[in-house]
Image (cartoon, rainbow, N blue to C red):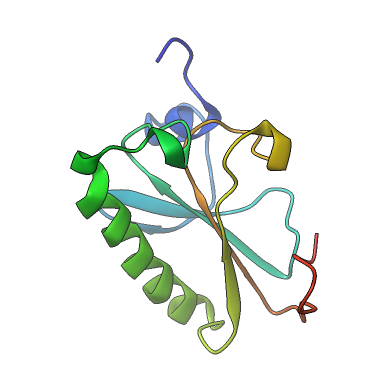
Length: 116
């Protein structure tokens, strides 16, 4: 990876963040530009630019992150209704090229809209 991302700088301690969860594989922070009253990001410590860049060796990490989404949602009090979004590429809104999962809650989303 040629340039450190914002998330890598958070992992390295170069930039502060409001960390709400952390383990040896991933961490979760509050989004700085929330799209819902609860908007958290689950980020792997391993830098993977986009979901399509994940390999078979990342299978356990990706599964772990999905399980942690549920735990983090419970801790945030949105486990009864929340949305998980992964943007893959600039054309759909990915701005930081380090894989991350959005947890959005405490907002009513319509069936035909992502709510953004």
